[in-house]
Image 1: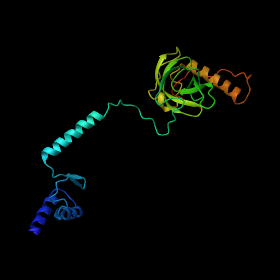
Image 2: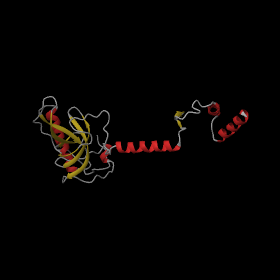
Image 3: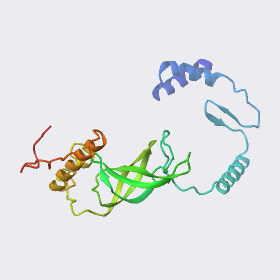
Image 4: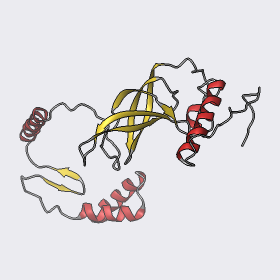
Length: 228
């Protein structure tokens, strides 16, 4: 009888696609008598529930547990989980705010400022927030995604009050590639800001505040060329 049941089990398992080593383990496991035979308490083996309780008692117990869980679990609103390395000062992750763009960096990022209270001194100071694809003088809505020691980075959510120098970029990738970070500005405005940036660098880095910087030279070709 044991040989017949073993052969039957082998043919059935092989048809189901089990590998030979796993088949041997299954035969030994199914041939071994259950240590819980004759018991009325449930047990769990190999990840499968083996319950010998009556159907009515198990059904009523599961119904009570389901009702208890549904009553105990409150409704939780979905929130955005910040990255593990995110520092929550001075702004929370994805905190939105409306600010005016004051200037541009040499990388084309807009500079906004917002007063915050220093945690150590308790004094108020202007906190710098960097946001891309903006023009000085615009009122924009931004979303914080990183806080550094002295400034924060933000994404542009919406331009509330656009500049008259804003144009539609000819390249659909200009806002993400990093090579044409001024393409949303008119050509004249681009050259004006490049001149101002050289003046600012001469004043801050070289400490030469009275240097006269000539206007940025340009060409009639504003696209499809490369210059270093």
